[in-house]
Length: 203
Image 1 (cartoon, rainbow, N blue to C red):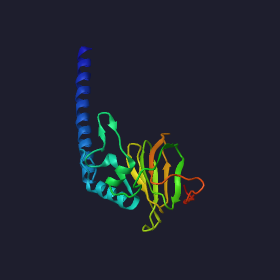
Image 2 (tube, rainbow, N blue to C red):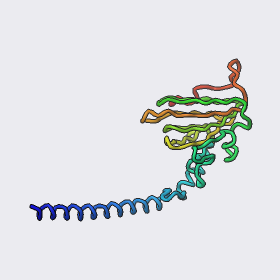
Image 3 (spheres, one colour):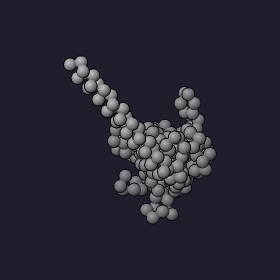
Image 4 (cartoon, rainbow, N blue to C red):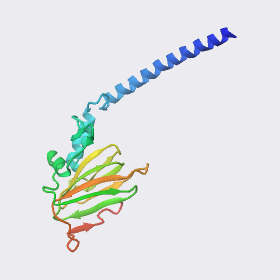
């Protein structure tokens, strides 16, 4: 009986070691494939990711701050803290030149904010906390707009310059809440909204 138990233990240990080696090889192979495809792998940024971030900045006025090569700006052991206006200015995204009107808010799953066009007001946003669809009017593109899909882990700065329609939609399937901080360069006047509403019917 003791001999049988010993043989079983030797077989199990050998098998686990073999599987462990195979799994390590698969992980290493996947890591190599990710690096070849421009994945971040060891924390660096591949060419594919850099190109995508350039496209998002140029076409959609958006930068994923947590994906920057230098790491998340404004962060330390306590977390992070940022100004929407200053973050937008640093990355030359346009948006609000001064912060006259400040809003902090949330967007529940399946809900949308914005989907409007301000004629004279520019805004800068910080967005985080949930999967999101960000859309901004861009007449230079075939669809007439640019769109970026954000992950819940993303912290993004995004701007809506005067005359450019914009929308923020929470598309999170896990029920997470999208959080935003918005900075506008003019005060909101309900009597004179100076705004076109319901720009896109599919949102």
